[in-house]
Length: 141
Ligand code: HEM
Image (tube, rainbow, N blue to C red; front, side, top):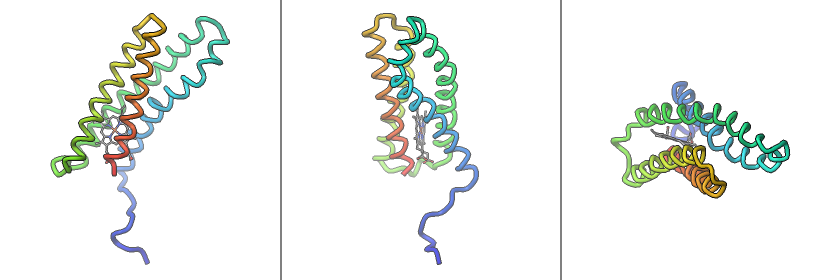
């Protein structure tokens, strides 16, 4: 026998909503980490190789970021945020600030030409993206 208060299966709209949000987070956050890990190898393919790989990644990562925003609003609308605890609202607010920092940081990373500035913006964008992921898990409960 199962206990009624125990774990329950999600309904299908929740499965679609969260699967899309998590899949997009995998591409946006995971892709950045994998790309950083592959960079030393990619450099061995020539001077222009890192830029070409970064441009190819951007064609995947920005649509994933857009999907995160769209499904993020869908999440927010689906979970009755008016009944949220103060700590949930605070975590959500910090997560939104990190999402902005991740997007702006990535944009400035792309635009920067000096290697040092490129590295700093990449670091900020990756940390902000990771922070948004962890807070996402925290607010999903
Ligand atoms: C860099 C961007 C983002 C990342 C990496 C991210 C990541 C995540 C992750 C990993 C979860 C946990 C899912 C689960 O455990 O089932 C989550 C949940 C959530 N996210 Fe995001 N997210 C991002 C952007 C956004 C945006 C822009 C919004 C709102 C406009 C948003 C709203 C939410 C909400 C409300 C939940 C909780 C959903 C629930 O409890 O059903 N997210 N996020």
